[in-house]
Image 1: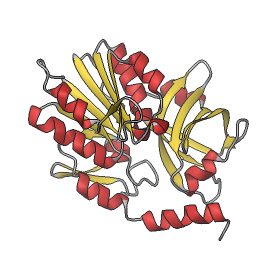
Image 2: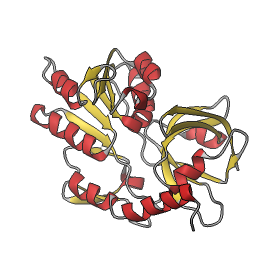
Image 3: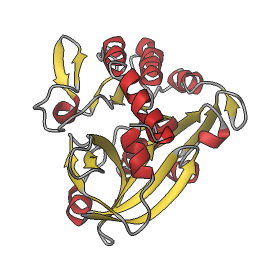
Length: 277
């Protein structure tokens, strides 16, 4: 059992939890994730990126948005309670080295998995340009933490309530137009946002890495639920990723697959709220 040692609400429907998991905290690397299960018997297993970790405290930090039944059940837990099953670290770690200038783009909840990657890139000696965005100011997360890492920092909101009124692709394009252009870009957020970040960098031939969060059942490559088309190959996000070349990912196919169970997920979440069976 993995005890929750800290719980905070970061924004509307977005929560941070520190969870006791000493072995995972010791082994995890930037870019990796865990699978957790709230119901010990027949509950759904969901992937969550490890946003941070402390070997000293033996804890990992999870940041999630309430979007369905499982995340709603997770958000209902309090400090001192425990999560029955936490498995990890899973997935391939981010390849970290000194590239030069790296632009890190995070949208919405995607800022959480971007945090440890930006942290590791900065530690490796890179010049880190960070762009974070959300629909509105109230949905921004980890602004102080990301600002502390960045050499250059840009905030965007769709409605202009904070920072620049722009999509994150606007400053990303501006960065790519600089001479010299960035050595690489990393984009993490909603699938549509990552798709258009990749399309923004494509004309400039800036390698763009994306971190995918697909339907996932076991996290070991056995179920095939997380498969994506990358170039002319089929890849499994849980074992081959979660990071891929954004210029090769078939985002349209991935987005279509992500919507497969949307009606069922919405019904379950509504029943959770209304108390129906």
